[in-house]
Length: 385
Image (cartoon, rainbow, N blue to C red; front, side, top):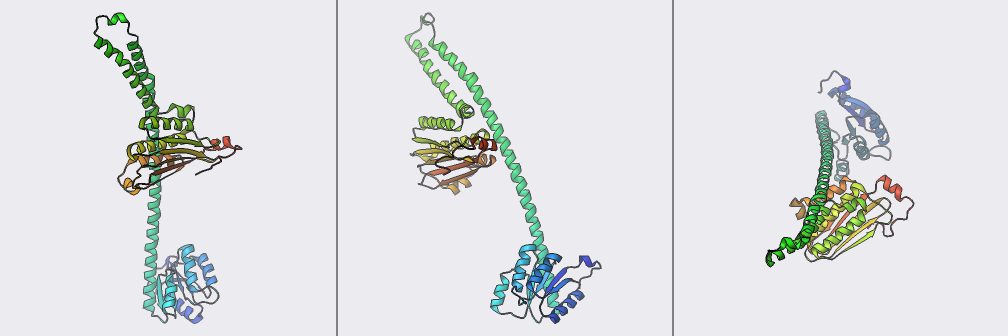
């Protein structure tokens, strides 16, 4: 018997039984065993109402009840609404009844008539199972909260890392363009303008060598200018995403000789700032991967938009790859693209299979100011792919 002087701390039980004598016998037995009976009802409708009012720790329910709602429906609703467990008390122990009862996930099943000790043990086991279930649920909720906080912290860290990376790229690009490229241009001019009198006495080989340095320096200057552009494309800041992507595609074609077709179907949608930078970096990483791994291929890159979002789609006809295997290898390229898009509230997807090429899709929502700017303008004819 449960010993507890504070009636408010006693386990609360709701009896759902349409045989009054049986119900009263159960009530007296429960009182003697140390439980608090919060009510006796004879119909399923009344059981749900009383359960909602008193929130018992356990329901003892007969399966066959008066009215349209039987004990199995009572158990199902009580569990779904309030997480209240049920122990069935029934005179029917046939296989079909047991099968139906099992569907409501009861915490016990007693066939009438049953002994007091059997009732006591079943109730205690049910209450213990419910306590463990509640503890597991609380632990699950805490773990989910910790996981959510961890995800938020990781997202914030990723955002700071990407921002720091972009700032460093911008600084290096500026230093290359404004300092080193300019000095190389000066060196090229100096070599090309060497006065003849300073070359008097030099052999033809030396003169040819010196004059041959000028185009070498010019190519080096162009390469550094291209590197500066790849580190941080100034056209993205000044001319917008479509122009920057078009230039990126042309640079890719020149470097790799892989045919690429760029299409701008964004209509009046405009994407700027970090969202535009995210799409540009996705395109940059995707094209670099194609150059390294796709083999013989052709590429299409399309930017499409509505007044609410802008989408970038890149497809190649190369050798493709096993996406699951690539993720298990822990490469940072796919993770970086996915994270960049998520940080601006977008979605990222990739489809790839050996021998079937690769398709990458990145969709970013427009900022509210960009949506307002496009308000009233007709949407793209093609819409989102």
